[in-house]
Image (cartoon, rainbow, N blue to C red; front, top):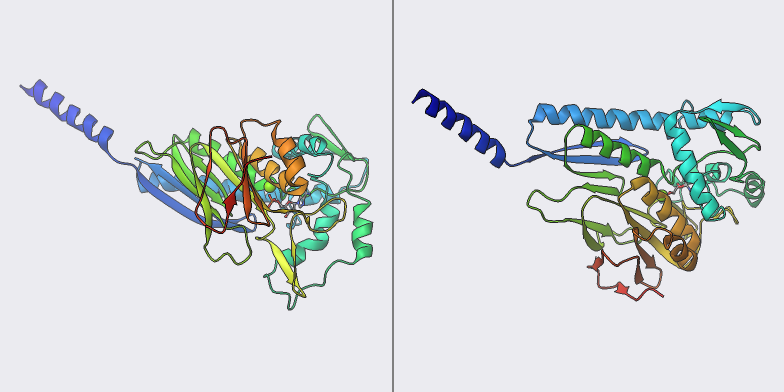
Length: 349
Ligand code: AMP
Ligand code: MG
């Protein structure tokens, strides 16, 4: 009798732990110059969730001390300050991200260029303020831009055995990929901690882990890619285990005398890219790659961007054009659902 009771107690404990619903815990913080939020779903308690969230935000802090272009003491700033022709030992993380960046720099013939630092630092003080022009530093002069453009060759670096050597006076700017890499690091922390379900949002770089608890796909909304969109949503996609990363001309910008100057720069002109695009969204299991490719496609424009994506057939992309048309690239398995009826989907050509 006693044995039967014990068995029943244990059995009902087992059943209740199986049927217990997951709870979600959210942490919002500031890192990489943007608002970051991480929402985890777990059957664990609040204390356990907080330990994991602490770990994640500590990691973000640590990554800022590697990748920040503005913190003087970051590893990246120190590398930029280092003299040419001297080998500098890099952390594994910086080494890896630079290497991944260089692969795509080569692939895009330098349109995607992690060594645009001399040029982007002329523009950064403008982007970092509000979108109004009053009280801003003035635009960089043509002479400043021309001078900086002399020192942006991505082939000016030798990477070997965890060290890097600049052979010309170039500067790194990993703004196009650091948040993607950070997203992948967060995913690793979550999986190691046994968290199977989460939503990561690093300033609009989104990643979803797994499906919803009921087995449904997550719905990931994409903002209307226009300035002052005031909460308008362009549409959404339904997905799982993917990063969804957008690069566009409407988020970081400064307005001077009625003209907008955004933060994605052409290595040819040293000025904001001006083509037919408003934005490109990339959907991929790898957030670093998604981040690199979204910036790359935005710089390359429609034709060359599509060509680049043919090398990544499992990477789904959405191109938003200034004429309000939208195309899907590699859209065999996924698709984008338009909500804002000013947009129209057209066939990829
Ligand atoms: P994202 O928002 O990911 O498209 O990245 C934009 C950021 O990448 C900018 O703020 C710069 O730090 C950097 N960047 C700007 N232009 C380029 C470019 N042509 N190639 C690589 N990085 C760039
Ligand atoms: Mg990017």
